[in-house]
Image (cartoon, rainbow, N blue to C red; front, side):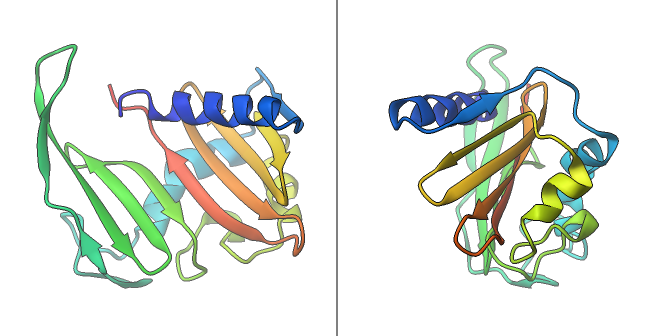
Length: 174
């Protein structure tokens, strides 16, 4: 879990190479708008959900299921922490030590800053956020990722419809 976002980035890059698809990784800063969506967007999607998470009901829908919190031990520090997954219609997330470390939206009922919700025109992503730090296409899906350090927000765009099909955040937890 500790290096989930790094594994996702490396996995996507290697998958693209193995499948002969084009992936481009850039080592440049992301725009202020992209930084705001990266750092504040997950909280926007969860706005209105009562705390502590997982809430029985959020504005986008009712809790479908949640895993039982598991208590694990950090291999480096020896500290104990809890981890839990929660699923709602069109949204899922993982909580580690009471902080959201990953969040995935697959339905339009969950708000994303700048109108970049699931179902929105995929061209809006580059228009509003600028050039991604990583992009690529696998099959009929284009991935546009905006990352700082090991923290990322990724927009998956269906090439057939040109619409955003998934938005996901992954945060490094140290």
